[in-house]
Image 1 (tube, rainbow, N blue to C red):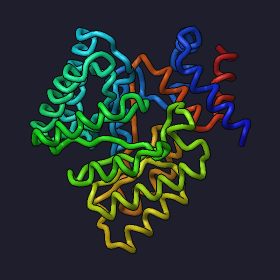
Image 2 (image 1 turned 135 degrees about the vertical axis):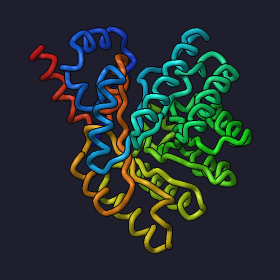
Image 3 (image 1 turned 90 degrees about the vertical axis):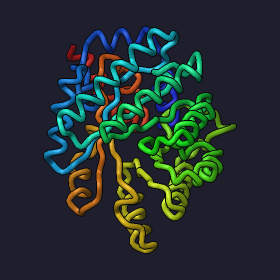
Image 4 (image 1 turned 30 degrees about the vertical axis):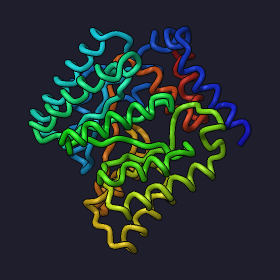
Length: 308
């Protein structure tokens, strides 16, 4: 367990290394990123999402990247997301868009970010589509929740956000959002956070996760249960049955390339299963966070680099 913690911390620190990023991305998708990333272009991602739909799965997609530091860069990303929303709808895909607010300007100005994300949410609403606001490092949490609340107050119902169970404060954030009857994606958390604000032990993160999911489901929120843990999935199914919670009030979410057979088997039982299918050339930080979730996977990256 100690080795695993050390490995996870080291991998997450490596995710911030520009030097290592240049080395890994210099080898392109053949280093193993294709295992988790649905291509470097939207065309490639559309093929993946269509294939998932054909097997009974839903999808969402994200243009990989984060921490844009200027208005022109954020405007470029916003325009790219408009094209993605249009394409997803035009293709008739059972899919939606998920995005990070630092990609739309949150690192330099909350008002610019709000204007950009409201533009996208409005465009998606006009096309009958949905936007998920992903959660990032804890330093962005309050600003992210504020923007989500502003969007809902402005009458936008086709938008949801995410909460991370490893943060001590998350139960209070759930209570804060419940009056909105929110659409919440519950994740464990994939960033390196200090023990002062986040549970360092997996057992505590898992316990908090179940408590948060059950609280949200019981209180009328729509809950996206984002986990690959079969025991947790079975517990959520049993809770829903016991409490009389209809299947249209929750869904399961998993990552592209992680346990595809499990994804299909749950969908075959009649549950909605959504697969996160991110794409784009800036895939390195995303890949490293996926490796950090299971450090044993680091071996396949090293072998891919050695093969060149």
